[in-house]
Structures are given as C-alpha cells and as structure tokens.
Image (cartoon, rainbow, N blue to C red; front, side, top):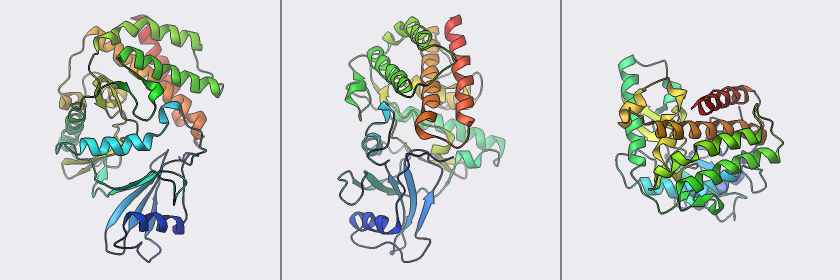
Length: 325
C-alpha cells in the first residue's frame, strides 16, 4: 500500500543528497547501494550504503506541491526537532539524526539521514516470538512512551503548524479536530454521520479536556511498525513527525487497537485505571484518530480499502460510546 505523497528519487539525486550529508565519503558504487523502504505511507525512505561501509536511512518529505492534511504541514521539521529533543533521555531508544537539510537546494523537499536500527519491527515480529517475550516487549513499549511524555512544552498543539496551537488543551484540540473536518469537507468526504452530528458529539464532551493544564510531548504514532526490537528488548522507536504537545492519553497505547480492557502496553506505562473524564477524553482521541484515518484515504489514494473500511467501523463504535455516555 503506497501513498501518492511519496517523493521518490533517482540514483543521481540521492547521490547529491548523500554527498552533501557525508562529504568525507560517497555513495557505495554498486546497484544495491540504494534500497527503497516501502513500509512508510507518507515520506519516501531508503536504506543507503556508503562507500566507507556504513548503512544509513534517508527520509524525504513529500514534494512541495503534494496535497496534505493541515496537521501534516511541515511535519519533517517536527520529526527532526522531536527526535533530537528526546535523544537527551537514554531510556528512549531513538536513532541519531546524522544530517538534516530543509534548504531545498539539492532536493525539492526537506530530507534527513539517520542512524539505521539493527533490529526488526514489532509488526514483523508479531506471532513469531514466545508469549512471554512478546508480553515483555509490549510492556517495554509502554515504558518508552511514558518516558517521551515526561518532556514538557509551553503550548498545546503542533510545532509545524502555528494555527493548530493554543494556550489550553481544550482550545487546541478543538482546532485540531476542526482541521480534520475542514480537510474532509475540502474533499467532500461523506461519513456515516453528519458533520453536525460529529461536531455536536465533540462539544458535548469537550469540558472533560479542561482537566489538562500541562502540555506533554506525545508521539501519537507509536504503533508496532514504529517500534524495533532485538531479542527481548525494544531498541528503537521512529516516526516522530506527528508528535505534538498534548495529553499522554492521546498516545496509541491508549487506543483499543491493542486489545480490549487493560493491555500490556498500559501495564508497562503504569496506567491501568481511568476516571470517567479520562474515558471521555480517550474516546474523543479515538474519534479524532478514526476521522484522520478515514480522511487520509482521500489524500493518499491507497490501493486497497482496508483503512477506509476499518476507520468506518472504528468511528461508528467510538461515536456509539460517546452518544451513550
């Protein structure tokens, strides 16, 4: 499943980017020196082999003219800034950023080179490990996310889009939520609920967000494909481009995709009991995620309907809870 926003490059273009990032060496001179990484759906990614024997990962943002959602504005800047920020905490296994170039001088988009993680993603490992090892890894993901959430911000919202920021979490989330609906209206997206019904449901539960007064760094995209493990240890987490200053309960570890009830991720995080207001907020965050997933389909033009169909069901289930409570 590939996104139309990917900014794929030729060997000569990648050679120019490599030369700028690593002037002490060159791109390796063989046909396998550049290998496209196809797991990502937004940015283009490559495994690059250098002439001095090193392997690094190159990530290229979508081209300037690519149509993206509002919250995706300038998200590579967010990713680089956030990865460098959390690198200060040794308990967060984030790869090193070797070089970042937002100049658009040798590439029509921003790009960066980062350290290659020598492990496999949890998505690939799932179903191939002993149950006790898998449980331990799931708990470790919760521990890593908890460490990310220890970073404190000065505002709520996105670094890459000043329009999606506010001094309070309620105001910021309202802007973020409305931006998704605006992106949907732009594409004439039809949900199984009217736009007004979705907005009314949001506003009925908005007071629950008033409890949140301290902006915390939230990864938001901490799914199994973005965690790397080796043996029985989490050794890497990537894809910080959608990070924002928000409430920790917005993290993927508190969405129901990992299973019903109390999950190993929650146990690892250290959060297994929830007040009614917290449950309200978690369902609002689930509704937001479902809407994002659904609207993304109209911007990325996936070649299957898997995400489209899943998001419809997820939105329906979440709306049902919010209407009943």
